[in-house]
Image 1 (tube, rainbow, N blue to C red):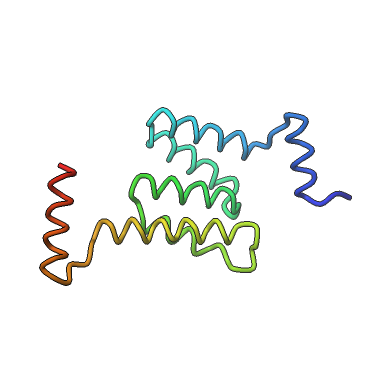
Image 2: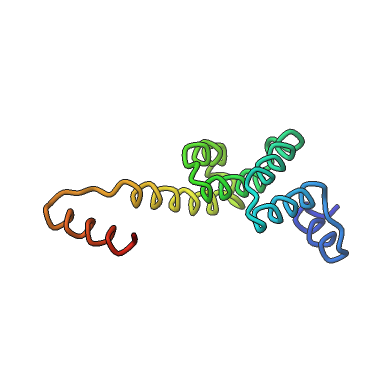
Length: 126
């Protein structure tokens, strides 16, 4: 019997996709057409069928990050443990992006120079 990874690779070579993969394609389509409500609806449907799927969790966390829903994304990522080698590294990368987003949304101003830099940055962005 072949390992799951090889079976998935063989199916992909044959152009066969699982219901989950087809659902994720629909989600990506909704995101590409800037329709976050439809993407969320698709995610909700997929989570009803595949509540523990790690690939789905990672995709949903990336989506939540893109719509600035950082706490729900972190909660999802917390379900992926270090021993899950195929998924943990990607989960860590998404956590780092969340942390970066949080820090950029709430910069720490420790000195007058920090305040001047922040003011100048905001002036250029507006």
